[in-house]
Length: 452
Image 1 (cartoon, rainbow, N blue to C red):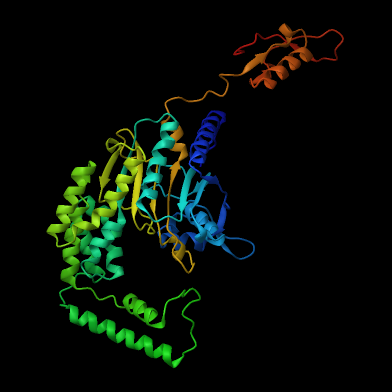
Image 2: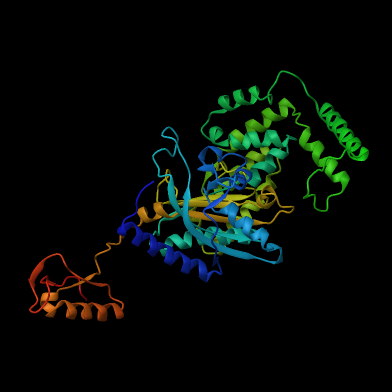
């Protein structure tokens, strides 16, 4: 964690003010959430992926709490608590976040505290909303003078839908998606070894009839437990689901049997799909052809096409967009489009990113899914990227008491300048002789500088 001096703060404040104005013109209003939240909020959101990066502790009241590592989960909690079901809600936020990283980690050289500024669009499920968020993320950077920003877009919804064609369990699909980064780097053997350890790839033959029988047996067991009335509540957020729907859902969750051959075919398909990236038209066509060759409906990519079309309608040039089917971030809650933002040809340090997470409210413990998407900038990285740095003393008028005739006259002159909106201060660096009749008050004799 680092100190921030006048120069850094001036640049950061200028960026925050400009971005608030840009987002405000699009109808986004500011919100603020606590810096300290119950740890469970972040574990529910990330599926435990953030657990090693939280600054967590037990407070005097006995609650397990954490410094916030990001804003999204708290903003969604706020929206759900206040009844977002009645329409669209546009919110923006900014402030410090905290994430631990060990020296050996990928982010080990970065600061553990940094500033985020972002926005959430809650309510609409249409691709046009995704286009708005992508366009606004680039528009904000353009307003700060970063005119070479570009966006890399992926779609975890397309990946999950493609994997569903192989009749895999949720556990198997999540395993494959969580390892897509290694597949993208060509480490198929390493992923296969992990899959074998977890039992996804075995020498045993498990056919579809056996899987169906297992599911039927589990469903009958659950139904008997419910009808016999064993007094164990199944949860308070069942919504409007019927007992039959609850039984079927539990059966699907409990049945983790996967056909090894189906898993291998899915692994092969995903290892190839994760390599597909590039310009919009060529990459979408290549992705469609690959899915078709694997026996997966190519039409699954249509949602991504619509999202990119909506971004173009918002004014985003295709030259600013790269499509990457191997883009899957570590946070487990994304359900659709996701993107990272870079400046120029940079590929290592992102300026921010975001995506769609329609199932996050249910993951946080609510009884309904609320469509939502958003993004956040790493504001510290943006300030470093800006070509024009602010000098905190560049526009400061220094008033000389010697030239003004007295300290009182200099104070009056400085006050007049500040009333006119000009930064002004008395320069006490060099003391001249005391004023006649004073009791040791120095009359400073320094030439004014920077006055305008």
